[in-house]
Structure formats: structure tokens, C-alpha cells
Amino acid sequence: MYQLADSGWEKLADNVAAKVRNDIDGTPITIDSTVHIVTEVLKEYIDMASRQEKMDRRRRGL
Image (tube, rainbow, N blue to C red; front, side, top):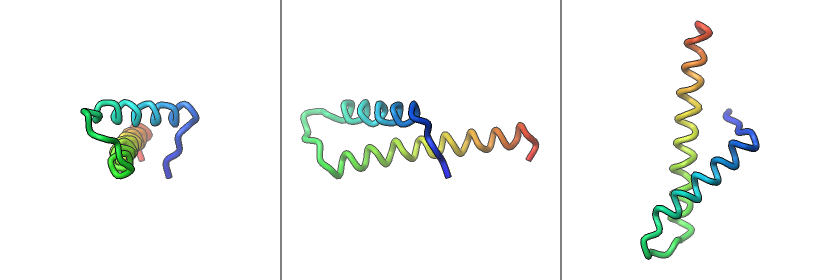
């Protein structure tokens, strides 16, 4: 299970907001597009945490 500290949640929110701003090109923001963006960012965070966990295990020799 992955957990984020308060600063992690703030960074997550900032990243989602940045992606939403980048995706605005005159098209309306819908719930579906927002969910898609949040899902993308969460996948990035999970992938990053998974890579970090693997590196930590290698470092500890597990």
C-alpha cells in the first residue's frame, strides 16, 4: 500500500492542476477528462513509488 505525506498530496494536486491547464485548448473540461487526468497522475505516482521500492530493496540486499 502506498501512502503520501501531506506534502505528497499537495504535489499530487499541483501535478493534476498543471495537467488540466495543459490540456485546456479551448475544449471544455468534463468530469471524464478530469478523471482521466487524475488517473494518469496517480499511475505515475504508483510507478514512481514502485521503482523507488525496488531500488530500496536492492540497496538493502533483499
